[in-house]
Amino acid sequence: MLFRKTQNTLQEIKNVDFKLEKDIQRLLENNLETVFGLQFLETEFPIKDMRFDTVAYDVENAAFVIIEYKKVRNTSLVDQGYAYLHTVLDRKAELVLLYNRVKDDKKQISDFSWDMTRIFFVSPTFSKFQLEATGFANMPFKLFEIQQYDGGLIEIIEVDNKTEAELEVPEQDKVIKTVNKEVKVWTFDDYCKQTKPSDDVLEFYYKLVDNVSDIASFSVDYKKVYIAFKAKHTNIFDCAFTKKKLKVWLNLRWNELGDIPSELSVIDVSNIGHHGNGDYQFDISSEAEIEMLVPLIRKTYEKKTGQD
Image (cartoon, rainbow, N blue to C red; front, side):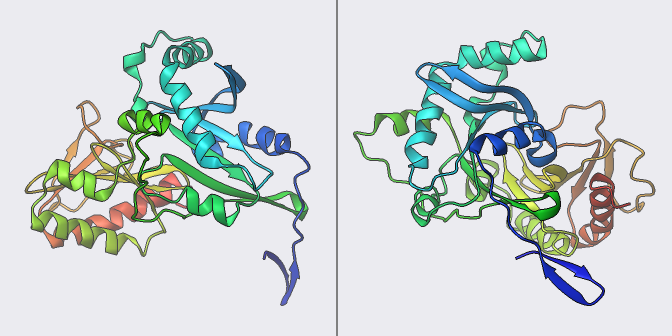
């Protein structure tokens, strides 16, 4: 429930139903950057024998995102989601042509990260069956609940329904098997298996994660080559492991951060190729450096979220 405070009295703010799925669609398509950090490409995009509600582009991952809007609770999100992904992977050229037309660009199929293709489902509510069916760790779906209230208030919450279990695909299900060969949902274990960090580096990482929890409730997005910590769909800082060091990037332009403790090793990577976002790279090899880094992460968070 939401309430409006007047002096010392709370007045409940009434929920207002969306009349149509189209109302949700128009609202979000006009605000994709604000809500999801995505770029709008097309609405009602026909491809093969399907029609995607919204096609968006994820700049950070160089990947397409298909957004579907739901007002009913009895449809199978799993069947629809995998059918859409299978179509995207089967018709890559059509998505690339769409991107190039909208962006006036000349990208090739190889310029996109097809393994990071995602399906977003948006609905005022999801059924228990829908939540359970889409809750497997290796499913490339995200669910968002949207509510409308008196006074023009809109609430959008990402549904945290993921478990540690992975979907076991029946041998005869060719669609899901084909999609899972190409689309990858990265986990912390996947990243560790790939980078093989030492116990010390993992300890530094856990210490950093624990310390920044006082700054904000960051969402964590595991990538193939780094781990992103986000607030309001904006990267605040990113981490990467080597065998002996924890690398941390702060997502600010060089000179935006101000004074940095002389004991901290910092590199200006504004003109150097690197995995994370931002111009500040810190190579962390001690707990003392983590304690000095945390205030800088707080400052970055405040700048990126407009609180400074």
